[in-house]
Image 1 (cartoon, rainbow, N blue to C red):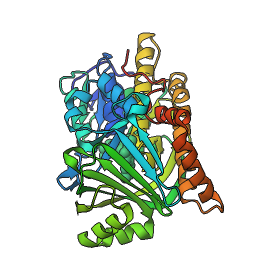
Image 2 (cartoon, protein in one colour; image 1 turned 120 degrees about the vertical axis):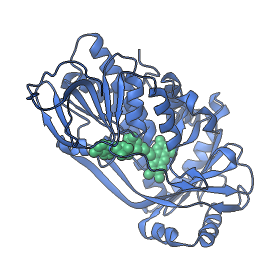
Image 3 (cartoon, rainbow, N blue to C red; image 1 turned 135 degrees about the vertical axis):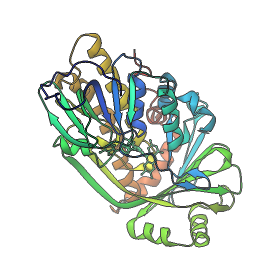
Length: 415
Ligand SMILES: Cc1cc2nc3c(=O)[nH]c(=O)nc-3n(C[C@H](O)[C@H](O)[C@H](O)COP(=O)(O)OP(=O)(O)OC[C@H]3O[C@@H](n4cnc5c(N)ncnc54)[C@H](O)[C@@H]3O)c2cc1C
């Protein structure tokens, strides 16, 4: 660990190894690593603390955790120098078809309608993380401590003291919680959450369809939740099948043959028969928003700040945008001799992020209600809505631009 800076906390340094660093990021998931990549050329000293080596659960030889990275965020990853390390393993999503039992044909989105070659790219989460590690490899300002556990946090006016289980003590002006939906940092900061348990699980697996997907993604809305079939490299697909808990448990308990039959029956013949399904994993689905995403000396990013239903595949996309805005605010504060751990600076991050976060969370909640809600008459409006949307080029293009994140005022590079 490189010694840097002087300790400003008044911590007794006589018998411990105390290091002062500019920012400590807790959690080396995609969002924590993106923040480290964004800060790596600012001259600030960054430490990322991760408690465990990544565990990759394979399904047909691929990471069963896959994310659709929208076009606007691909531009962010390019700006960070990360995309070049993952591009070869990213599968373009050129079109998307959404349908349910009500509207014949459903809606089709095509990247060409907004003059793009892809709406986004499907990438295995572990590949994105590996690309971020490669980007950080030659950095002498970012250090990753893994596996490492924080034993205790102490809050002071001008900094936070972080005591690790191995006896090391770190001090920092800003502690960032990038430690996921069950954030320990959030809990230690006394920040509570609004929560909604959907009573659903998302089943993920890699599957092999008979016909080539040609970059097409499919999403079928069922009364119990959506089933997404997403294009991967090697003509494989990744499924995210959201279902009520009891139905999800039933699907998880099935033999491979029975599961394949159920999948084929539900998805239909769009890609011919699905001939093979790899190992399945299930994740409980919830919507969650931290009541504060900043406190004096603390900022939350990614799932630590907000979790959303995966039906539009936007969770990590929100997190990447959090990372960019927070990094820019830290860089600006540093440039203008401000203390980036002060609440006034952190509020600027919060103010820029809340409209995006609330709008995506609101849309997800609305979509979930429209497609699974049991409110009488809603299914007729849904069918009508699908037909109107399917035919209204202008509205559709606007929606597509918004969901690809292309029109959002988020820095693509830290300046
Ligand atoms: C089924 C499913 C499908 C999804 N599909 C998509 C999609 O297509 N597109 C999309 O944008 N999003 C998708 N998401 C959401 C996306 O996976 C999450 O938003 C994203 O993984 C959050 O990343 P993160 O870095 O914030 O948190 P995490 O990935 O949870 O990472 C947190 C990290 O912090 C570490 N950590 C935790 N506690 C501590 C601690 N005390 N000390 C040190 N380290 C700690 C963990 O080990 C972990 O490495 C999906 C989610 C699900 C469930």
